[in-house]
Every structure is written in structure tokens, then in C-alpha cells.
Image 1 (tube, helix red, strand yellow):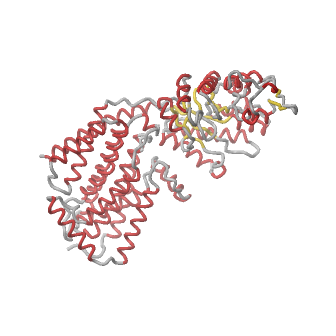
Image 2 (cartoon, rainbow, N blue to C red; image 1 turned 90 degrees about the vertical axis):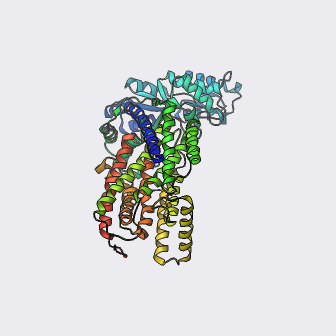
Image 3 (tube, rainbow, N blue to C red; image 1 turned 180 degrees about the horizontal axis):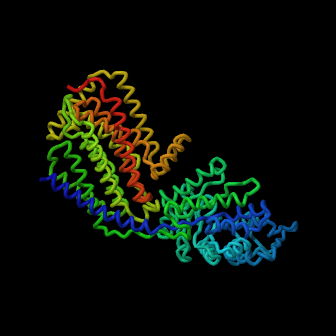
Length: 614
């Protein structure tokens, strides 16, 4: 009776999570506009190299698919280097008439009641003056407007920026036609101490924050948190990276950033920097990126910020109760009738945390990620015989159980989706908490349960304790054989590698061979399954289940523990809330199919391991 109630509550939680997923899918489906941005400085360099005017270069790039131009604010030092400002030997400053009004007005906006002309009356140190921004070049704005392209403002931070000065800079960017700001350098405007003022100015002037993924600009997390409804994710490849990448890899990289990570603004650097047909080659390169993105189902046009996913809080609470039901079901797989108080505590804690804001829901989502892979693995070997026995049709039965285990893990992922679906998570302002813990703790728990001989069937608490202690004592008394030690070391290394490469920014590099292999899988399957699922997790799990059904527990236990890597990875796929739901579903499906095929092959090779069935 209690199990039926728990399953009913789990189903209710899954239905609630399914509603959340549907609402999120609607928001994702409406957000298909992608903006292609080119850099004004590169446009002028290309114009000079080819003998074309900047207007002509912009026209070619617009026809290729570019929608806007990133124009950087000049600094006083830039203007001196460019000849618009001349420092006379006597200390006087002369400014070119074509931009003098703009420069003087800008410095007045940043430093009210202060002047740089005449220089003899100015108390602004030249060293400080050279760091100040002085607005956007007139020729850049004029050329961009004449070709009907949008303006992306590249504002720069400087020492001593006040809230009034920040507001002046934002207002000036808006007057010049900008709707999005991408900051120059390694800090956002207002860092450190006035980021909130920058957010206020951004809202007041109806500007969006172009947040460059992986850039690690100081202050960008705080600013994104302050302007959550005005964030557009930007992907760019640094000039230092460009020479090491092929054109094909760059095109794939931009398409994947749009398709898989919610990028809606592609900041494109020129690929060809030398040759006879620089303009044509770079235009073709931009056109190839645009075509790749449109083939993926997106529209090249002005980007817009993401809508909020409107979900009532009580729906998320129902999803949390589904997690609680999963926790109790997992415990009951080991211990019969664990007690009413445990039920009450788990359900009250999950419900309470779901009402405690994003942090509380992140904790419940982590609990789901820790629980459901364990539940799936235990279910997959439930009722396996204790001794070797003939098992007709064992492979088909094992396949059925593998599919069921993946489905159970995916249910845990769906509950995570129900708890965390929202604009902040889709934009990576908030993220799933405890990625590495969610990868390693289920494996440790399963290893203990199988080593303690309490994973196969449930029993009363006293009997479970007795069996666990007896198994541990027996294990400690037996000598460790060389092959067992080697196997344990290999398993530890495998788990360590998996954990090191998990997370939103693991910092562990990927080999060139693996990158090429991934690219091939992407082309064949559209969405690449995770390598650890189809090469390690699911083959090991399928073989482990088959051996368990044959009563070969000595082989089944370690294989199922290793195989849980696939279940953990499948659930973790849904924890990447910034990845569109349809891609997450396809990734899990592809991983299951390819992993199942690999598992059948592996089982055919090793099904006759020593200790045959009786």
C-alpha cells in the first residue's frame, strides 16, 4: 500500500515537472533570433588592406549575413595615437574639428565642471586623461547607419567612474543607436564598486547586456544578476585562438553555441588575414556561419532577451514531492518499511526547500540527481538469483531492464527540469548546484550497497545491518588479488576522469582526436551522445544486468557500479538548463541506442567469463 502511494506521488511530481518542461519549451521555441556581429576595427583594417571603403566592406558583410557592428569607445590615448588629438610641446592640446565637440562633451559628461582646454587651466593629470573614454568615432557610426546595420556599443571601464558618468555613457550609447552593450577589456563598466549603478543605467536607457560566455569578465556575474531580464548570451572566439582553428571548426563552434548553449549573438572575428581575395573570403566565411545557424532552425536578425518561464510555485512544489517519493522508494529498495517518520521528514524537507527560493530548489534538484541513478541501478538488478543459474532469453530481459533504468534516471532529470526551469537558469545566471558531487556520490553509494550484499533485495533493518557487516568483514578477511587491485585502480581512474571533466567549466582539455570524433557523431546523429554513456556506462550496465540475471553476482556487482556512470550522465544532461530540452532528450535517446548496441557487442564477447552458469 505504501509503495503504491509513493509511486502515485512520484507520478504526480512527474506530471508537474512535465508541465514545467512544456512551459519552458514554449519559451525556447519563441527565442530563435540570432544576431551576427562584426567588429568595426577589423572592418577598417580590411578596408585599408583591400583598398575598399569601410562602407563597401560593410555592404559585403551585410549581404553575407551580418546584422550589426560592434563599435568600441575611443579612449583619449586612442585619439592621440590616431591623430585626432595632438599634444603640443608646450603642453597644450589641440583637437581635430571633426570630433572636438564630441570629445569635449564626453569629458564634460564624465568629469562635470572640468575642462581640458586650455591645457594650462586644466588640473586633470595627463596620465589619467589618457585612460578616459571619449565616445564613439563619428565615421564608424555614420558608415554603420548608412548600411542599415545595428550598433553594438563596446563601452570601457575606467578608474573613478561615478554613477552619473556611467549613466551618461549608457545614455550616449543609446543615442548613438545601440540596443546591446558588450564591455571591452576584462571588467564591466562600474567594476569595482558601481556595478549596481551600471545596472540601473542599463535599465533606465533600455539597453541589454551582451554577456560573453567563458570570458570571465570581472563583475559580469553581478551585473547579469542585476539585469536578469536584459541579458543576451554572446559567443566569440578570441584573436589568440583564431589562428589555431580551421574554418570548419569555427563554423561548427558558432552553430553549436547557438543550438546547445542559448547563444543569441555571434561576435565574429575575421578568419582570413592574408591573401588576394580577403574581402570575398571573409564574406564567404560569414555567410557560411549564417547558413549553418539558419539550417539549425534559427533566424538571422536582431536578437532579443529571453522571456521568463511562467510557472506557479505550487507546481514546483509538486515536483519536489516527486523527488521526495523517489528518495523514499530508493531507501525501501534496501530497507523494508523504513518508518513513517522518515517519510514525513523527507517530504516536509523537500516541500519546504521548494518554497525557499532558488537555493532551496537547487538543493532538492541535487537530491534528485543523487537519488535516481541509485534507484535505477538497484531496480535493474532487483531479485537477481544468488547463485549461478540458467537464464533463457537473458539478453532480451537485460535490454528491457537497461531501458527501464535509463527511463528511471530520466525521470529524475525531468524532476530537475521541473524545479529549475526559469530564465535565470536558462541564461546561466543561476546554475545547477553540486555537479561533481552528483557524479561521484551515487557511485560510492552503489559500491557500498553491492559490496555489502544489500543491493539485491530489501529486508528489515536489523537483517540489512547484519548482512552488510558480515559482507564487509568477509571482504576484509580475503586477500586482494592482483587482477582485483588492477580493476579497482582502473575504476578509480575512470571515475576520477569523469568527475574532473564534469561541471560547467571543468578546465580539463579535450584531445584533438576526441574533438574530431565528437564532430563526426554530431554530423551523424545531429546531437552527440556523451562518450561516457555509450562507450562505458551502458555497455557495462547491460552486461552487469545480464550477469545478475544469471546469478553471476561476482561479475555483476562491479559492472553495475561502473555502469551507473551512464545513468548519472543521462540525468546530468537535464541539469544543463541552458541546453534546449529537445536536444537534451535527443542526447539521452542517442546515448541509450548507441550504448545498447555497444553493450550487446561487449556481452557477446565476454558472456562466457569463468564461473559458468549451473
